[in-house]
Image (tube, rainbow, N blue to C red):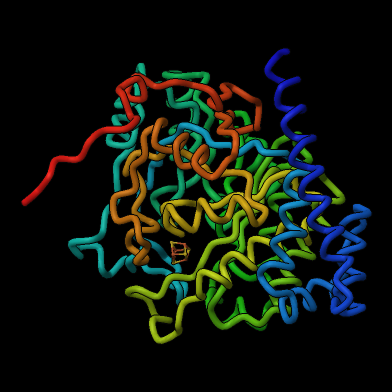
Length: 415
Ligand code: SF4
């Protein structure tokens, strides 16, 4: 049996079990007609409507939405749980914008702040060289928006990375940066994205989406690109035959209908282009920002949000958790609530989560640690490249450290 055959075999067993779970739900005589209708739709692989999405947020308890989401997850991806080996470069945390939820950035006038940085091209290339000979497949580049990081700068930077290491996948910048850079350079989105592609940009991460609805966006991120501009830049990128991701920043002042509206806009664009790979819900964290008075969402709400995202975005192949942001245990649990991707091994190269107050202040995981996290909750760890090509199936891998005897040992008697 080859790698792909064995993955399919495992998928079908689990998929049958998750379908049985929904059958059990449907046999519950106390299930309301509305719950039953949504469950039946999910079982029949039919799309839930906007109103049904809001209904799930308002009336879907954790076990109900979890069972539906796990079914969708296993129908799409079986037991596979993807990760990649990447590192981050954050060029600067100085920013011309002033998003109210941002714990990470500093205004230009705060450039002498101890927590502010702005790396030169040489410093960033040194970060790339540091990974020479290491088995990373992706560099993830994202940070603040500053005038000196302009179109020529990034074209040059991407070209230099590719000249040095052509196979390293460059996943970089969001429409927030691109909108600013192209406007300053007086080039159209179309021309700008084409230039980025020619310089070596391979894909776009999903950041900067926040909440699309203007009722919320104008309060929390009024001055950066709006929803239409964010979506248009992704659409142009997809039309160039390229792939990208999408995020939502949830759990602050938005209402459930704003979350569903956000996903609806993404679902519509995905119907048109098919260029999104994965959806990444990002939890609002309240440390050191202008929204610190707002309570953070609970772990139950985080899991419900993953689950409803998985149910609603029927045309997205993958749902990702960022373990550095949500913490390792909730990330493990999320694998039963629709999530099939744990992002990367990272290497303590990002400050975005730690500065926002996440559990992981120095996020580092070795491949073995990430593989163990996935295996311990009964899933199959699959190393992927950025475009979800399977590189390694770690399900049965025995690491050197595993060879040490781990069976019964008599504990010393302490007296
Ligand atoms: S979220 Fe991004 S665009 Fe907004 S202030 Fe922070 S770094 Fe700048």
